[in-house]
Image (cartoon, rainbow, N blue to C red):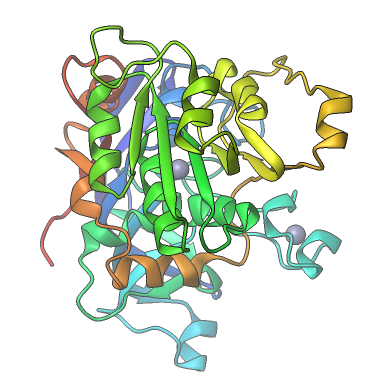
Length: 362
Ligand SMILES: [Zn+2]
Ligand SMILES: [Zn+2]
């Protein structure tokens, strides 16, 4: 498709401009998507402030950010057209982590470890723009009844679902989630759906903890705010009290807070599984008590991205297991994308998840 489109172009830390740029051209294996909604990810905020390098060759802009998106197909490359897979007008969810499908990691389904992937919003232009190019292999048809806004939660939800798959909650387990962000609160809902008897959600602010309660948390625990009715200065003692001394059978840590990464080890029951999910800093280390961990036979796992769980995440939204109305708290226009990013990082007031409504029509 020829023509111009509006796009938010990120140049360097704290410099992003709304510009008119060419609508990208598609190759035979690609599809042009008219972007509808695109979530603001913590990583977009990191890129914007220069806290982490982009996935481009030199780690720098200019680049259009945004990778958590849904949209409508407007143009279909020859290969997917010949196969009859997509047609203009189709409502789609975009999986931005477009692995190469040709390396050894991909051959084993370890798509998250592919070193040759192409990721809109990270290594190539993304979806803080009116149009975005996708590989046809990384588009999913939206289920009947799902809105574009709901569909834009699927990318972070898929990552959360992969972490939950590794957590492997068993019926009746006591589950502790550290970090009531959008991911942590979706993990709470999934833990309940997977049969946890009780879920304890641990955080430092009552507002997101309150959303976690609405998502199904049985206990919310604030470990920082002394004025909170949910405050405790002894998280280990608290989990012991709530479990009758047995401690937590499953512990997941969707936060980069090092204290939480460390405390996860202290609240784990014998035979527990712990999954580390949040992204700490480059040099951060977790101190694992070696003998105690061996003798209590615990499993320590890590989760990165979302291989092979996209259909699961889509079904979780379609089935109402994830209520996106509870997760999204702020919506911004494409024109206000930069303001939105700044607000989600530094703005005063209660907030959980922001999303850019590039085109809010269904
Ligand atoms: Zn993301
Ligand atoms: Zn690969």
